[in-house]
Image (tube, rainbow, N blue to C red; front, top):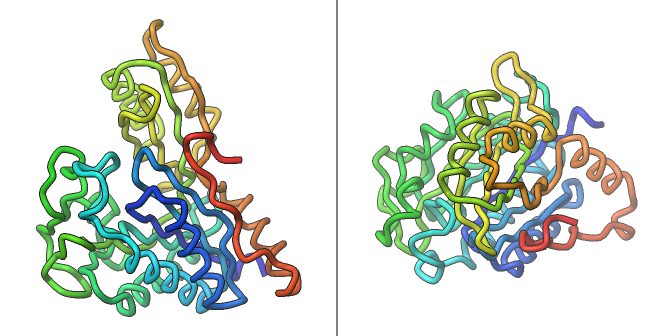
Length: 300
């Protein structure tokens, strides 16, 4: 059963817990053979996410339901601008991922096929694909959008690449979405007392040592958050969170310190265990989705 299960994460450009809750409910209503294993909301970053696990067809159905619900509810014109966290769309990104920290090309290919089925079925916004079939990484796809400029300008979302699906015009209210497949991402955030420059230096140290995507952004309470997307790459497995924290701490000047560090959502083994437990129970015994946890207090 376990190898039949894949995961998808829907990232939404709203920090309202109610948006994540409603998207999770939509996913739960769509099918009983996929389950929401995690929901997260960060009001300071105006960003939330829903993570879903299930067999291929059921995962696709539930992910489409969650993304459609979120797209209906979020209007970028009502969200903070410039964006506190980079974004290019109301449904900012959808990522299909194997449930393993190791590189697995067969499972990644299955996720890639699901991503393209999602892109074809998800209507209303331009969609840029990333992953093996698209021949470009997530970062390369985002560079074809206004994602990286969104924290500095109040302008509407835009594209410099032709979309793979959907309309060519970008709506100011809904933006565009990037959709694809990649190795499982463990979102690990480290909040530091210190300057943005110190955070950027720490991010550069993590990037150089582990080859993962990482950025430093101002966060609540005057902290700077070093957000790390930990995942396998090439012949390398995903780095351990303890090693990443140690790297950050070693790079900080004496005047700076780590205030807190936490995983947003679930590591792959935890997501898999939660899904296997939920899917093995009778439908009447399942909770429809986990409660939303918010960044201000850290995940439970």
